[in-house]
Length: 115
Length: 116
Image (cartoon, rainbow over all chains, first blue to last red; front, side):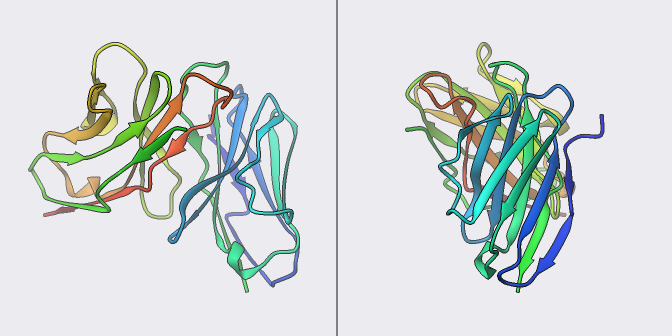
């Protein structure tokens, strides 16, 4: 298996622009997580899905952030408009299936820089 | 609410010496506990987990962890450290009760430096 795939790996954009991050989970996994990592705040859970349904989005910073999972093999995290404080590494992770105590498998991350 | 604490920001150890990275947790039910490792410019990698059974669990790269229910701890250990073990280590916990679904809480991370 190729593991969790994220694209792009690096994104540099100007403040105010729309940014879309993409994730393909491991085939067969039914839970998907979006995290953000910064030096100041560490690793933060933004949102997670189970069977393509958002379960908890309490970590989404504000309305500028949105996430979708239209099917079991694809998810997006969108920031519109982007701001310099959104600069971070964004990770996607997947786990499952079922309600077992499954570990999460992380993608390589997308390093976002907003200037 | 569930939480995880990693009391040490950094651990320094000489190559060949045993290492311990500490973790304590708080959950309302029985915990599922995990350790992950992150190398520079990489995503987190799963090392090991405790679900039930033997309190000493073994994982990847020679790491092991000991679950202590009375002390609510889950410390990561390795008998003989390698320079290549230098990385950022995260402890994580998932509650088995409530409506949190599959939400896992991660600690702040402990940076391990192994000196040759």
